[in-house]
Length: 197
Image 1: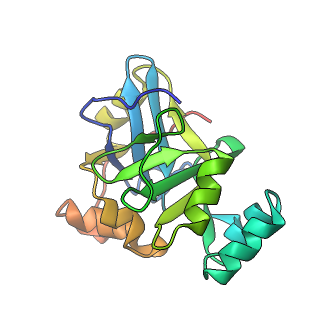
Image 2: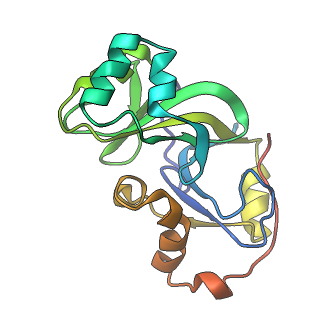
């Protein structure tokens, strides 16, 4: 996994404007993990995928699924992280109980990390107090594509706040982000655009 970028957009959020009608990104909140001269990488963190944590774990390891069920974690949603490689599993988690291991995960901001290994998944499922999300796929932008979309008003950047991802209910994250920008969700209207699929 590449090292995280240090641009002003990553780590951070992109809040979709209501005029952004691409079905992959309408009313989405995107966690930006990387942004550099070669493009950008982000994850939609407010759209459920049609599978649960239990479904994903059943395809990995039956014992791990039982461990998740015992910990009360199996019924949670998996998120549709974006239209690129929707079969690829990513894990976004709060650091503390589990710290990033070099080569296995990268830090995204002060208290979040991102990885994708089976070992990390097993550790998080079994770690008491671990706080994590499973995401399928990601959002990617070609060089300068994201900058052009922001200039067109499709996205509003905002600083990263881990509580918005791990502390706010899924269906309230976009509206919560809009309100943190000091805007009224009902009156928030700017230009259009879309990320690459």
